[in-house]
Length: 386
Image (cartoon, rainbow, N blue to C red):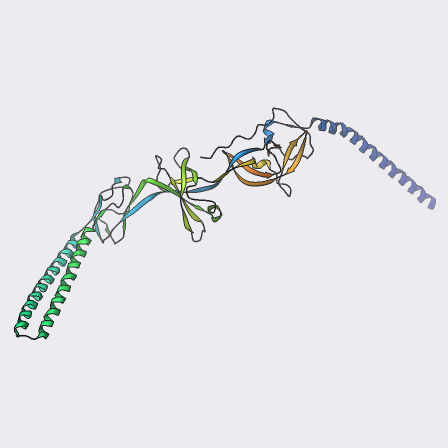
């Protein structure tokens, strides 16, 4: 029995040794077959087209803030009722032009005229009482001189004349107020412009301060935008901007006219007002979008996609000699050169350095390369955004 077990163990060892020898032979044969292919790949290298290579160049890099808001008139006004009453006539409708001082609305003045007449009659009565008091005072002064009445009676006459004088002044003030109320029933345009809204109709009875018409002056327009505080810090008055307004072709030049000193409650944004020329077709309430130019600088720049971020530090794949080399870079601000996005490169590259574009996928450092066309052209020269 012992001899049989020993024999079985020997057979198993021989079988295991044969399997190991066979596996080693297979692996050597596979390695021998792969070696020529790998050698051929290294010899050929990575073939690149002109579009796969970007040249780092010094450009004018502009940084801007994206904005959006609504167009509004710098000058606008509501025509409001100054007295309560029924509207008799409204002489304009939406879209019509008006001039400053033009009569727009007339209210019923029947009641106001009666009140004025009442105040005038009360003033006339007070004036008559004043005349009586003045005559009595003059007579009493003569009587005191002759010794027919006492000085106490004269003092009473003086007081009566003063009271009558005050009553007459009060009545005259009531006349002035009634006359003003009747004049306030006729409403005129506070500014020149176009009628934007007609909020009441003839025959309606309106209260004091009720809105009847809205007038806007389209000769001066602005766009109000809301920006976070971190973007407002870099802005100053008169900074240039470029806007696009719905319904109007092309970009419209603008500038920062005013910056609100207070942040809006709740939203914590700051209102910035951009002055624009009044292009044909511009209307209050249209939506506008664009950008405000914050600053411009000369900088070594690359497209943002060429800077890779799959490592701890940003880097680029530079074409140096016949190999691709990873170079760590330090980047600055992002902006535009013309209409193209770009990122500033502060350290790690020199002008004229060629790197792989972002469209090229992952490439192993040390890979050989060659161009299938002419060398890549430098990035286009920058132009100031409009």
